Length: 110
Image (cartoon, rainbow, N blue to C red; front, side, top):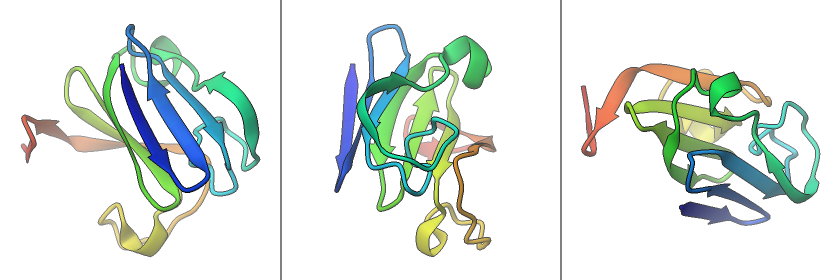
């Protein structure tokens, strides 16, 4: 189980790798497909539907986004690329999930 909190929102990974989120969602950082607040914990799709069948093992919260890593090392981001926080220089915003081709293994990019 893992928990990430940021001003106004929280993301939780449960023991089976499901991601749950609640709080402010105005930048899509909850990953629920809407830019709205969520007062009760809500399942972010489920590993089979959203994260290519991979369980989530780590989660982090940024200023207006959530990032999580799967058991196979795929990095997923949800929400706003506030001040180029994803390193893509697009400044995008929205509730879409983004998967990165590079894999993060033991804290190093491959």
